[in-house]
Amino acid sequence: MDIHFLGTGAADWSPVPPRPHYGPGEWRGFATTLLAGCVLVDCGPNAPAAVARFGVDPATITDLLITHGHGDHYQPESVAALAAHGGLQVHADPVLLPELNAIPGVQASALTIGEAVQVGPLHVLPVAANHRLDRPGERAYHFLVSQGETTLFYALDGAWLTPETWSAIRRRTFAGVIWDATSGDTEGDWRICEHNSIAMVRLLRATFVRQGLLAAAAPVWLTHLARTLCSPHAELAPAVAAEGLTLAYDGLRAVCS
Ligand SMILES: [Zn+2]
Ligand SMILES: [Zn+2]
Image (cartoon, rainbow, N blue to C red; front, side, top):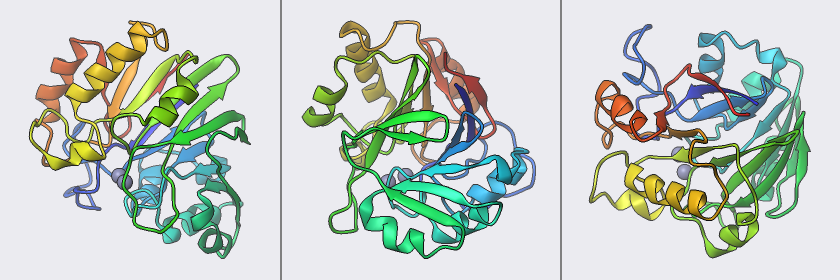
């Protein structure tokens, strides 16, 4: 499965880069990822600009999966901008559907925890994410994304897995994981109540490996990185690479197989 990281930042980054060109991790757009070349996960305020910046033809994006409705992951104007290129199937929490269905070119359908859906060429099972939300009744989702025999665990935003989610995934095998690492290498930040730090990802990965969900050498990408909580990319990326973790950056392309 092709993975194209178009935005790798948490909500504390400025929505516009300070200059047109920047090195890996110097600036991060809000988290948005293109899977299999045609399924976008999340669409915040700078997603259309990121699609253009990284040379993705917006007409090739047929489907949008929305993890949750926080402003860095979902902005109706951005969804409208992408839907203007031939329409968009959007898969989101039921609470967001009335607003989504009012956008020209959008056909929105409801996600339900534990109910698999076909999303373009991908088979997607939504599970509950451990994340605080503002809209009454809304749920936040992680996704088990399968293409053929390959399943990727897409896990942001969220902190420790809920017991409900652990039961849903504990017998699965993942070829790789894209993990929320908002709190980076900072200890003592309150955001660990609804996001991971790298130390938490380390423990989660060890559990996945020991319990047979993940091979020890399977790829793990860290994304949704907070501006104020991560050491500079040039320092942090090699440090985590030494333990087999990839610090994602805007524009990074990868393959999960
Ligand atoms: Zn977020
Ligand atoms: Zn969030």
